[in-house]
Image (cartoon, rainbow, N blue to C red; front, side, top):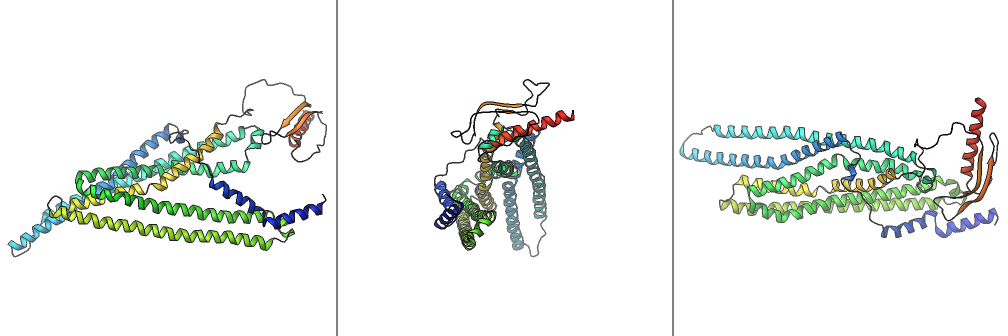
Length: 455
């Protein structure tokens, strides 16, 4: 087949398929429907590269996260006591006005509010220190581990034999070195501290709620799953549509990259308008995804606030019946109400942190497998025999060779070749016939010959 015939066949194929990437996209759609579950490593194994200092900082960060998560429910107790203090003073003042013709200055309220102000100041100082140390310790520990992981990962890549790179693409390794390790850094950093803080707030809130007033706590507890679910739905919808929107823009960017890299072929077949139309279609998909994201996020937010206001109505209605019956004070109702709601929302807002931790476990599965891979030929090994004198001659005797990525295709079949020191040879053959390995041997012979001449 001549060159003109090949061009005609290629042009007919492009006109038939519309574009080169169309078949690939259809294949990818079928693959996405049967996408397997992403393998992950264990939660403890994610921190396998942490040393003693890292473990100490993570323990201190965990303690600070627990302290930080406990302060907010405790603040509601002070708020409830302060509310009861205002009400007691108001009742006492009304009684004084009834019995006496002039107002009496009450110093008890001022002293009580001074005590509450001291409590608020102490809790504010504790939160300032605990929140800073929580984020600082977890971030420092993650940075130290990721630095160690990057060095070890790069060292392990350089340690592999040349056949390993025939199976693993270099672009994929670069992605592992940047994107996957960044995901690991996100998953083992301050997000773990915030996750522990949210769980602590949830547990402390319900402990305080049941201790202060178990009846109202049970009523709010019946609504809290709906509140937590609404907060989870809102964060999940926002995260999912953001990912889909970014994927749509990435697809449009891939089209642009494909066309620009093959711009000579596009101009040769007059496919400019067709590629512009394809790029515009992908941009329209991204725009539609952004519109769906905005509508869904706003509907989820509206549903979240609807649940909040309905829980307000139910809690205050039942709380008022408990106040009228004399079982609870107003401060107790407010304390139980705010602590349980805070606990429910803290649990519902853990979704982004859990997702980041899960992504880190998935990314670590790929990175750690590469680190754990032991090469058949270790270039850094010092074991074995080291010859004192090397004669710069290379001889191939009855060599059989296949690429690791194509084990069924034999590239060399009983090849024998002798290259003398200083000899110049030329290797001719089709693509994939093993010339690269022969070039390496010839280059080594030339380098040995030049070294012998210098000596």
